[in-house]
Image (tube, rainbow, N blue to C red; front, side, top):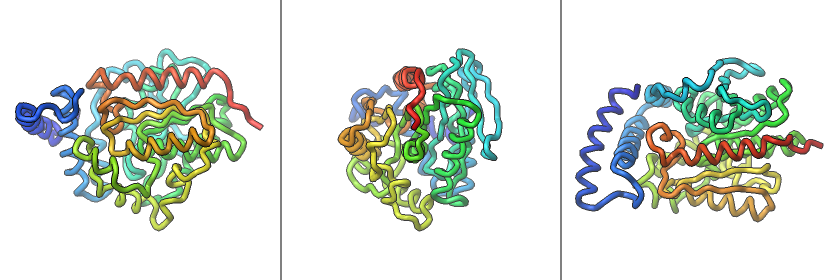
Length: 328
């Protein structure tokens, strides 16, 4: 179950949100009382966790994981491929075709099967696909581009096992990795079948705009982004296309589904990324989730409104996984 500290914060947020809504109404037009309580608690708790060193932050985020009924519908198999640890999520309704390579979020610094396991299981069930979630190396111990190297190694190991129809998916920092991994594979003549990009952090140079205007709703703080980027890059340039894929040649992007919430701090940069990709001729589908905060799929176990993302991801994976990508 969630940590005692987070449960206590939920109670505090319930009181604060109740008082605020009585005087000013909901923070966003479509937010229920319960959703606003969770959003408020996440924001306050994230600020508390952010005061600690990176190792402690990882431990505290992992402690938020909770049992979920969806785990009864999947078989989880920890394993290693190409020397990289990871975990298979095998749904009972698995189809024989598509495989998803999942790259979790966490600012390149934290995140694990504990923080993202439920979201990964939901994607496996919605898409009827076997999902391999890669436990890639994390900064600062392993700075850029170690994460890209691990993602490429995982994909190539899956291909070596005979998987033809691989969709690369990821959220937040993992969405960034899904893009740059896909582009590198297209360049190498081994493209994935498609990419699922959930709230992707595409521009590590970005400042202002929705990073500030949506900060009252979302659960990060504007000042965190430069610190996360500097920790990940360890001296590399933030406008390197492998670090900030908004600067890449997006004409090579495989068929992609992009999901972004309109209450997210990343909204502006994701919209700009989509515009650039479409201008370059890439096939990009977009779902802008009204009034949703960052990584809405991680709240799907609590709120039905967050499950539309599951449905769209599942439909996309099934569609692009029907045929193998062209490989020259």
